[in-house]
Image (cartoon, rainbow, N blue to C red; front, top):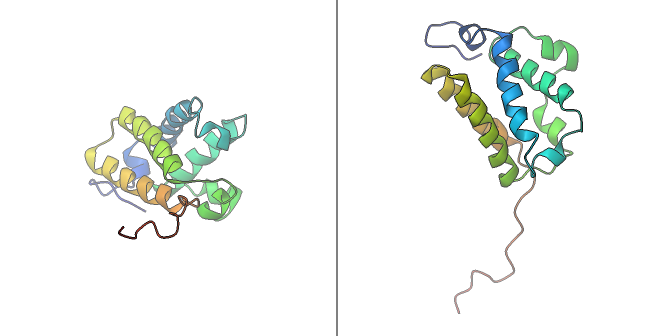
Length: 140
């Protein structure tokens, strides 16, 4: 669990569950209108909002309610059915950064969250760009 500069958990430092609920609501407000990401989600975004807020709250030091309900997060396995490439990762990160910027968190917490989000989003990439044609590297 990451700690804030104060030594408290990030969950406590940002004000608890309400922070994560608001962060995730802002994030999904962007996803709802995103032509690249929206097709990856079910029509009703409420369950996804609740799960992501619960996961993030637990990850950042809140009560383990997500794991009690859903078990181990297994992020890569849960996202495997969806084609996630660099473009999807970048779009996801863009919406999360907008949501995080609106939260006005201390710099140390923002930096820790950005690092985590970048790492997790990159880890979920499961669609590689097309291979170059044979011999593309040859000098004429």
